[in-house]
Length: 109
Image: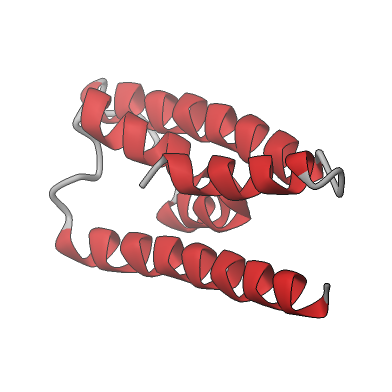
């Protein structure tokens, strides 16, 4: 699952179209891991937490591959059912968007 956005992005690089999606996913994944890590540390130390809507925005902007890694490695936000439902809807949104994009890209050629 984590590899899909990078595979689609690599497809665009191979077609010599754009490097931007690969850069966005890579940077946002790293930012997402960092922010999830900060939030986990704050949760453990009973400090002010990063609001969930910020985490969701990061996921929506392409950070969801990093969020998957952070959720598994840090065991953070992986048991909150409501959070996970929206999280996986964001991932489906990205996959559907890429699928439609690649389909239209291939049919225009």
